[in-house]
Length: 441
Image (cartoon, rainbow, N blue to C red; front, top):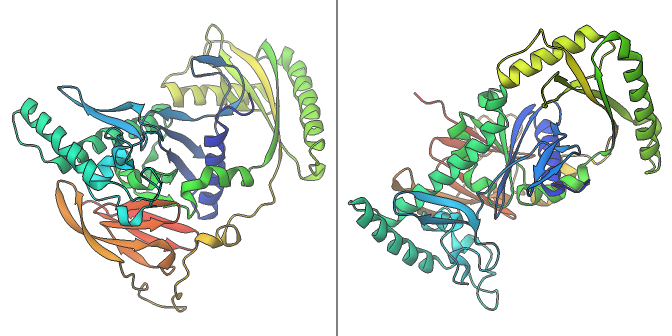
């Protein structure tokens, strides 16, 4: 049970630590890979769920609160006779997208190839029978032309292949944005002041579009975004979490018993960390109670304080925030006592851990008023918002810190590609890239 969703959890750890280091206190994490997208919410602390369903199996164990939707780079795109559909089927790695030269179906990756957002010349040549060929743009274009013809007949109007590809991208973006709404907006959080932290192999290709759909104006991209989940495991703290079922009313007569449970759990958690050679003096302890209304089955975690009245008012406020109402005349039940002991990782986030991916061009002089010039490797036509636009392609490692690039643009990194949509600009930072959306007039 400790390994459930461990990959995405590693990404959340890394994204939060790198985002906080870069000055972003409230973030929505957006991890888009080949088959799915995982999203999570962070506003000062990691959110956990204690009762969830994974692959159809109910799991009563603490884990990161992660919501998954079947939209990834390999999600199959098709027309059902009336609507554009994306997923839940995935082409996987074999055969993979059509452009992978294995006879695969059209996917989200192919949509980005069709619109020019993914350029074969700036993509690894690892395809074909000998894994030494580039993406097959021609095969993707042929399939999109055929599909556009089919849709044109059904719709009764002419559809261009690139417009069809952009339509599928819009469907995928809406699906991913709705996933984020479920873990934020639907729980009472206004994400317009948050930063979208994107990672995963396909995250940077769609981050601006997802952020715009949610009303988010900032996107942060770490230099290791394509492998951030693996990076995050190395940054993770060592944590021991212990819990005990209580099932007692939240009342003064049961408080001493609950306090005893918490003290015993703290001892168990500290002992578990000691076995992993953790420094006892540096261990942080967090105590929580899972509380619910009597007659209901949806507990919420409340930070423990030795005050029944404060615990009660905090629970009512949390319930109102998440569900829009509070039953203040209803008795409260302490369902579970939880203790989390944390041994903080001494791995530092910043220049030393991301050196291999940092820009190496000449740095701007101190006090320079103008940002250093960024010269594209190439200017090509890319399809944005219904038309082809001249778009610069930049190599991230060649960009000087503090460089400012106006969208549309394509930033090619060692482990990913970031698309800067029209109306956005990107600032190159020591710790990565920050994309900002211009205020709409």
